[in-house]
Length: 326
Image 1: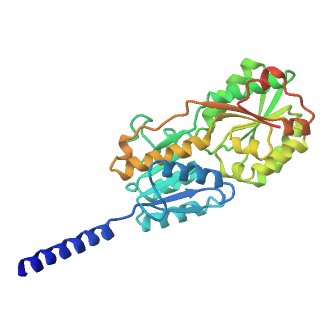
Image 2: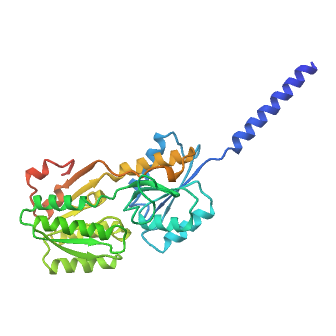
């Protein structure tokens, strides 16, 4: 009997030890920090969550995911970044270059994953795409050669196109190279570019007054600055009001009622960001994970927007669209 009691006691001790070990096992904590508002980033959040689910993560069980938003207010980014560092989170998923920069300034140790950075090498986030070399890695949607392709598509849709207004954020990483590539492509297409700087939301109305005064035939833009993304509905509405055909660099502008988009599918990047998070949580170092570039691009055309401004999209352009909004 004593032997049985002794074995039973050992069993209880081992069971308690296993239970304590399971309870002590740390559930990783991921922070998702966006520059925009919860509403404007909702589809990006869902894409990232989908990616987590594909890797077996269940919120509240084997991972904690917290969402924070800067609401387009740049002064909030450093405050939020500092808060995440104090909380000692396991991984920070940082959206857009201003947010990535704020988090980079706050920590050189917590892993940072970029779902869609613009020119991460030029911005100083990584040493190179192949060898990031620090605590930051992820994906970039940066392809300056796409600016020329967007102009080509605009020219095909508008054969009489002559002058194109260009919305840009002068201090945004990659803007100088983007502008150089765009102006080079414009010269080869016989087009004139009218650069218009947008530093905050108040510059948007001024920019549209300038482009209409100079009789721009169409509008294009560079991605990235929170003021442009957060105010995309306003930009789309002003383009329609001024009957300006527009080619956008983010698909969300077309979903908001804009005319055309050409570029990478950003939602794919946000799903892929979960792959980076998974690798890091399993022990990989950001410095050793190469930054991915987009390999697939799509053309989206909004026929509702075309009808609104009295534009007929030529069949040879329409047939190349990956998605048509009717």
